[in-house]
Image (cartoon, rainbow, N blue to C red; front, side):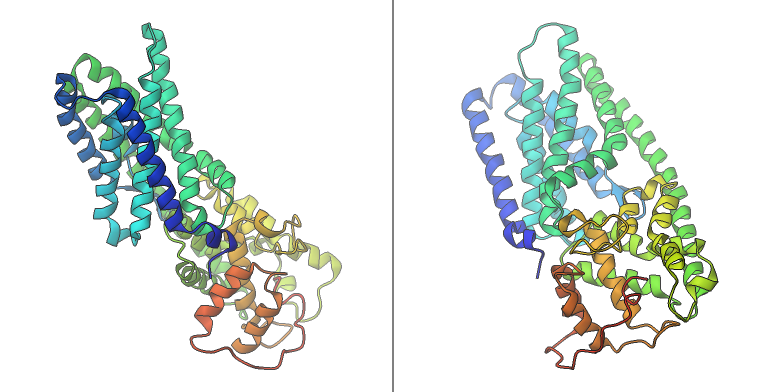
Length: 436
């Protein structure tokens, strides 16, 4: 079962709303602009529209693997040029069709549904229409026109962030406003570079149309620069994974814990139909969620008796230590929040901040469930492992109080292939079971 928000606003409904709004806006523009297909200006725009649409498709098919499982498609440059170089009645249609073709071609590779394709095409049609509408405002003077270039880029960037946040809302259950903040923060630098290239290309094209060839060369240079950065980040990813393995190997009882949690995260996200860069970031965070324990002594990690209050405070600090340490790696900046808050509880009784409900990031809520399940089904110095059936009963008992009910249900659909298991409820586990 999807999360509560996902049930209220399913992806097909988002697709219908976005495509409907895009179609309504296009009809209004066409009716108000008195578009004449045979007008010489519009005829000359057709080859340029086809060239830019081809650039969008090629850039989308060959993205840059910028960070861990994060792909950046250099499509913003041609999309921006469509908005400022094409007539108002042509720009949004060319944009929507280009995205539609791109998403359709890559449908099997991305695992997208038809509703995902329609949503992407609809939202980019609206973004292009908003940008083109700003650009075609009647202003006088070179300075005012130059300012419109910047305003158009800003409107398209914010429009992209807002519509994308609503697109991923049904998948993650994250409130749209949180998605907007994340997308603006994560995409600002990369998108700024692309919009800057687009503005330079527009200025050059007004002087000499063939100057767009030079822009293509500049874009290739940016592509190669990001590609080199990606290779460096891939090395960092492997280093962090090795450190996570070191933490697991320090305790013979928990060997392989982080790997198992990451594997469960991948299965659970697929069960919840959460895919793409967000899912991969959560999986990587699950892989590193206990990395803060590298600063905890063996005497505390492997203690067979009850932890003292001082030792317990040290143990409780490991999510914060891990997150703070990982902030040194900007490529993983947002994933640190999943690690910092993976011991928060749905009812607000967790740590370190006592967050509750949907205020806890989705990735942290998911890791919390999977971390607890693997902890319960693994031997620990202070107790024997539970059976899977016993752990399932504990998860059910804590669903909606300690853990997000929708995530527990998704995990149980993986663990229970056929019918519910009717076993007596075990004695309440040591509270350290699901919190270490």
